[in-house]
Length: 464
Ligand code: BGP
Image (cartoon, rainbow, N blue to C red; front, top):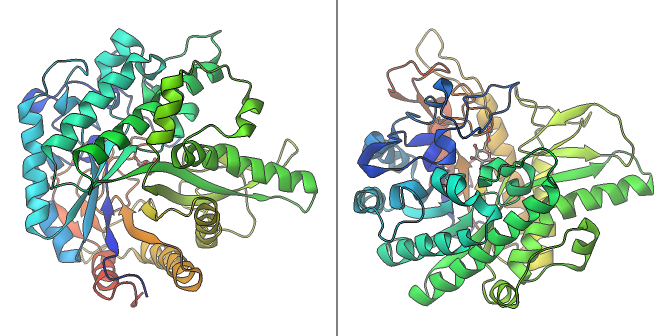
């Protein structure tokens, strides 16, 4: 049995659902100027606002004005918690002001109050790809050490304002994305510059900022629980060749575990020297990393990969990372390989390595749902995906005593895809009438998975 206080719910990011990108004093973030993108064309940040930047994140599903009706639907599904991010630019529109924007704080007051009124615990990501654009223009984003202070100030404002209201926090969404997609951290690297060096320095600043936020959160309210949030994926060796096994081990270590190592243990692991990066790291940084280790590990899990020590093989996409095709697995329409057993594999490693509570804060299936002639969406494929992953998670919790805090399905209501900018890559149990071109009434509608997930939560995972 899962524990009775298990946090069932759903997760979104402010920039992918709120819209209202310039309302109530909000400043521009990186996600407000990113291009729309598509399945084949990655999104770009150029620091210029082009026409196709306005949609989709500018309007998204207008959660900013629809949150009450959406929370009502989450409550009907029985959500115990709801994970969202606070848009940094609602609180500090330019990132470096002395005083926060009251109207921005007031929006999250209303949002959290509405959640609490329904008995739904807010789970807050402090930074989910929502870097203030002006911090990029003026300071070069996270490659600049000064960002640590701007972020810490922002975090401190949140901890004070939402003291006693928000208890679960995560410092940076998928912090590993900083070294994969540097523009996500507002780090624009010019041709000829040492990309790896700059990216890891930016990451280091985030590690330090995160550790300072953890300390602050604990000082301000000892009840606060602060997690890291790491994008995870498993890599299986392509063959029994020992070099494939080593390559797979390194793939997991360097792509996922490294980011937990620093944030859970509070220091850089020995193997970091093989990255050949000269970090600008101070004694104070070292102290902070040590003093600000996280309380739990939040992670996203969608798919797994295959790894070979040789070049070649059929490449497949995943969430931020790529790998090789696995002949034993099916893939989503976007090519992400579906692997519930990989979740077990991963949870075992995370729990054995860190002995910290785990929290699955993202999991789900992106699908181009269609409304049938009866006006319904019969998303059995999504139910199958979630059922298999929830079963895997339950099995491992029950059989091996892993401490798992909760499960938040990604995008319980359809939102804009982070990777492709598409609306048609839908994850929701609630459909939103809006298409890839931005047309639609924004009307919400329950999919078949809505009642299924309600039953899952109601039975605490016993009825799948
Ligand atoms: C993660 C992000 C989310 C989210 C999800 C699904 O990387 O934390 O923001 O969107 O993946 O990805 P996508 O929207 O590209 O399908």
